[in-house]
Image (cartoon, rainbow, N blue to C red; front, side, top):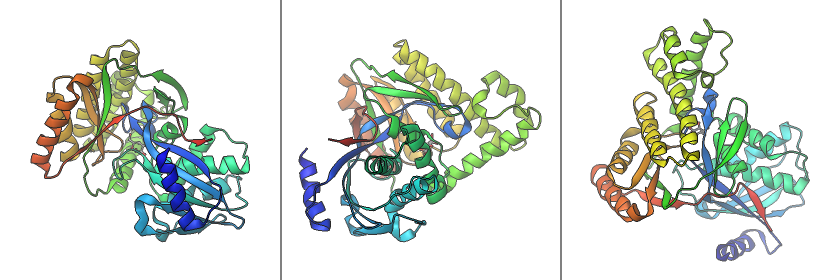
Length: 390
Ligand code: GLA
């Protein structure tokens, strides 16, 4: 690949001319099942061919030096491989350092460091999991180089732990799971309560998966996200007072929830929990529709998912709502919804190939007129999970 040559030049400039290992770690797009993972429900994401490429060489001492071609102004960032703590100055490299530290705490100790150059094709802040891509990438580099006896699901769990405990984002497991366990042309139906999963081939005859980035410059995702999570947890505690055997919202059917919701005191928390339950059921319905080739139904459920994320979960905002609402007007757009945490980031849409140009035109014009700047579009290919390229 041409850009590996460019990356190698940069590597030599920064770290000297040595032989390097090559890696790829994908981003993810979630087709349906949003804000269900930490509520013990199902998600349906896939890994995508946009992601992070890395060139890696072992060092003989116990520091690592990392450089991102996308964030050249941050320069080379150096951190210790043992006993490393979160440090604002590490900036994006906290995802790398955090994974190393989390592995060490779990008994997987690195005995030397690395020089690493990364180059990402994922747009920053698009809600496509560039941080999970970096964490799982680090996990795979560690396993490859130290021969740790650990499987991908365990690595995924440690990557999530790094994000929760080192970085402080209380995320569920979806992103790291999709990035690590992704499989070409398949989405993953993952039950986040049990971590049981299966692959479901995504055959969209004559249609594409289109990601539209709001390009919203800055949003305080972490605090709002952590707040949603604690609202759901608090509501669950209230219901557990009358139903102690209930472990997670994902265990309830819609009808069971309707019977129990009066136990939740705060009306806002009631809405949050209602979304968690309904979205989980919707995800199961959507997967079964897709597997029966009922793509229209899948599209309708994507629409319903967005509405619920807007009205009950309140994580959309004017940018995502504008994109989704415009998409719903386009003939040949089968379905469209926000994807990821929300508050900005991207929508995911299923669009007939014959309607693609018009889709882009309608969204580009309508969004720019209302919001004041343009969105960007990516047609997603579903890719394999993080791996070394040999
Ligand atoms: C972020 C988190 C995930 C998940 C989604 C919402 O991407 O990292 O764990 O909760 O938001 O579905």
